Image (tube, rainbow, N blue to C red; front, top):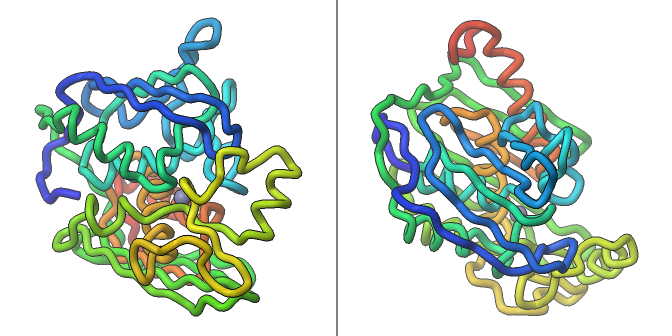
Length: 285
Ligand SMILES: [Zn+2]
């Protein structure tokens, strides 16, 4: 995340391929430059008419296991690509997809960070218009809460817990001005409980999930080696960066989240949008 006030795209197209985390099916995405103010736009080039699905809140159709966009045609597991784009300060790209789900790489955002870096981030001749908060905005559900507090820059503090297993609570922090997204956040992988993976598979989900794509937690602790002592909390920040980018504009706020996830991230973004009203990006009392 850069403090540069100009919008950015990529200089040239780049391909990303692999398998989908849930479908397990082969998947390929082509990332292309896009004009100013387009944001991230997915395009299902495998369907008649190649429908476009903008990465905006109004297109969110599911948040249960990853974020699914697309009222007309679905695009699944978009959050890690959205996170990489926002994390690298890339505002505008078009993503041509041959199927329904994005490739999952190693379960982190590395595959997308590598591709976007290779594609050459490039400034465009239009300023960003960040969303600025004047008052705190929050949403909660049960024992989970997420708050956006006014701040001069994007900053996230995340606390996560895994119930019923020998892994303690974790906390991670990311300051967009002083921390490096590509090395501190992007490598943190999707995590899941061993017991959960089995029940997801029974429902036809997580077919691409394995020790190569997921940090797996068994009753006794981590099944594979974590990349960071707080990799779970770092991955939650990765998801939050991607989900909040559905606002369509950079957010200047300090996000405090405890035991949250995709649903609450999206709920917070919707609440911020509702409060913005027609004040052109300033949420005030
Ligand atoms: Zn994730």
